[in-house]
Image (cartoon, rainbow, N blue to C red):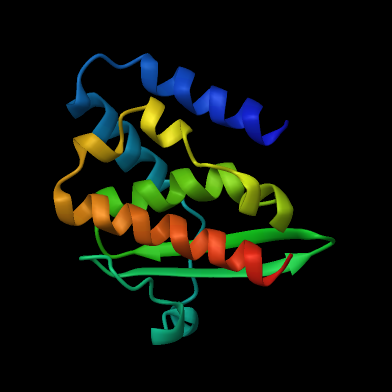
Length: 136
């Protein structure tokens, strides 16, 4: 599945819900399904700066693609990083660096988050993009 196809799939999934409360529930479910993040990787160098809650992001470059793992101590934030990982993990650094992350605007995520969570979302995006640029 291409990056754009995956983003369209996310847009379709979010469009099934009318209310933002239901979309939050969906995000929470995504967070619950996030792969376990090893305790020994919860280090300061993996913490995303600018997030109100604690969010750890790690990645590895394997066979020309970036693979992300993450965790958060806040349930909605964990869902948000899970959403991002489901879209960008397994993509090439060039694909990620060139993407505009516009699908997040299409699902209305940023405007439906509190200002501090919206800032955290921006920090997550910047960290993922930065990993892509460093590895391109």
